[in-house]
Structure formats: structure tokens, C-alpha cells
Length: 402
Image 1 (cartoon, rainbow, N blue to C red):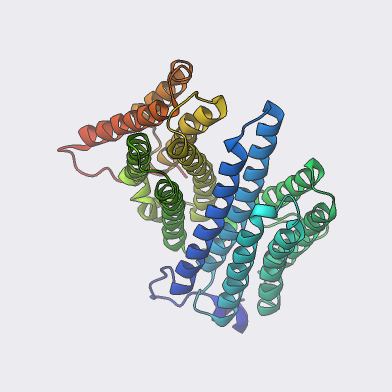
Image 2 (image 1 turned 30 degrees about the vertical axis):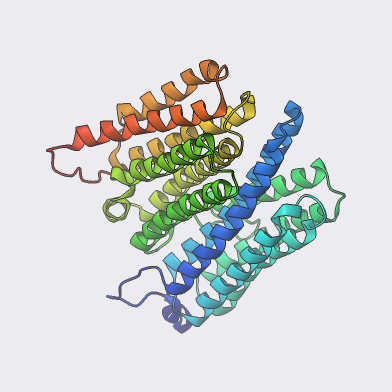
């Protein structure tokens, strides 16, 4: 039987459960943090160096992105399970908002002199969330989940803090990657803790439409960061013909990614959640798809910014890997989302992946600008294929498989 505290935290029946202004404010802060991570990566890739250095820099960027995703994702699930207008939930969101701001400011030195600032902000955000809710949910069966989350985040927090205290180097990245593996693994398997059991996600009650709305918002956040980065890069350039063409191709790529996402799986994601037999499990699966798409969009953004800065000259393989691999990674996540929503994948998605892979060898012999323009043309072909397939036909309804 639900306690009074739990009843106060749950969304009120009959009320629209949409994103609040505080959640949208949090999204703006996340744009800043993502921009800091992207800018740091651009600096690392400007002078690619040896393969080992490239892989190390890519790994550091991935760790930063996963940390930001973890902060945002747990927040989205919390506001989808509980009333985001309740004071306790607002306190949780504000704590995580402030932590994200501090993390974003510390990102340029996260793997050097600001590691402790970054790690401490992250740990405070992750630990305070289940602690506050465990207190509010005392006497409820849901308190057990929050206690398991608190223990998990506390254990992972040890690796975050110890890693931050180590001298700057690969040891810090290894410990932080281990901490993320603990957190992501625990979330996937129901936050198991010896003696306390676990709570499978599919048993959770949540507002699936709110969660789908938050995923759509997150996608726009990632695109917003891409627009911000490319806009700043172009404004700092000499506005020559090459810079302008690269900027136009980058904008076209961003618009086409938006079009491909929202038409049509991303657009009817809330409908798919409503039709799903297990909304929480469906939400968990679509979270993975959006995480893959985030990585693809960030990689694309880095590649676009590098191309705007240096449209001519030789093509460093890492740059071309970002320009072609970013959209390819986005298409992998988008194909996965399409399968979750419709139980099928459009042939155009596979064609895009094949084309992007096939273009890599010949584009190595050209210049960075050519690779970016070619990528935009491939995405344009996919968008046209979507339009032709849907022309004159009624909108396809969602048919989730789970």
C-alpha cells in the first residue's frame, strides 16, 4: 500500500505530464556542457598525432559524454516516474542542473587540473538524487530501489574521486570508465545489491509519454549543440568560399539528421510508448538508441567544425572518420529506433550505411570539404527516399514489438 509521501510524489491523475520549465532550463545547461565537451574534442583532433593519442582522446570524449548522458537520463526517468512539480523532485533536478553546470565548466581540464571538480560535481549529483528520494519514500516499497541506487552510486563514486586524485593520465580514464560501467551495468540489471535483491526496469510504473517527450527534447539538445558549434566556427573563420561552403554543408547535414529522425519514428515515439505492452522496458531500449544517436551527432559536430576551420588541404583519416562515421553512427541508432517503433528497418537506412563506408577510401584522396558535402548528399538521398515512400500513403502507425 502506498504511503502518504509516495502519493504526494506521484503524478496526479488526469493531469498532463509534460516537461516543466525547470526541466527545459536543465536542457539549456546541458547544451552548454555538451558544447564544452565538443570544443575540447575539436582541440584534441586539430593535431591528430599518433593513433594511440587519437584513440586516447576519443576515449576521453566518450567518457565525458556518457557522464553527461547519465546525469540527464536518470533525471528524465525520475521526472517520468514522479511529479516534476513536487518540491522534492524539483530539488533533485536543481541539484543535477547545478552539477551539470559545474561539470561543463570543468570539462576543458577534466583530465588534467580540474578532474576533482568534475568528479565531485558528478558524484554529488548521482548520490544526492537517491538519498533525497529514499528519505521521501520511507515506508514505501520504492524506497528499496533508491537505497540500492544510493549504494551503487556511492561505490562508483569512490572510483570517480580516486581517479580524480591520480596524476593526469590514462589511469584516471580507466577508473572513470570502470565507474560508468558499474552504474550502467547496475541500471540495466535492476540495481542489484547483495542482500537487497534487484528491481527489474520492466516492473516500474512511469509516464511513458513524458519519457518519450524528454527523449525528443534530448535529441533537439544534441542538434542545438551542433548548430552552436558550427555557428561559432564559421563566425570565427574568414568567411571565404571554402569556409562558407563547409558551413552550408554542415547546416544541411544537421537539418537532414533532424528530418530523418523525426520522420517518422521519432515523431510518433509517444504513440509507440502508449501502444507498448511494457512501457518501461520500451523506454529502456529506446534510451540505448538515443545514446547511440547522441554519439553520432557529437562526432558529426566535431567533424563539421574541423572542416569549417580547415576546408582545404590533405584529409587526416581521423577527420574523415568523424565526418562519415558520425552520420553512420547516428543512422545505426536511428535504425534501431525505427525497429523498436515499427518492427522493421527501411532499406534506405542500410543504403546510407553502405554508402558512407564505401565513400571512405576515395574521399581520402580529396579534401575535407568534399567529404562533408558528400555526406550531406548521402543524407539528402535518404530523406528523399523517405518522402517518396510516404507520398500519397496514410501515416504509418506505430507497431512496437514489446
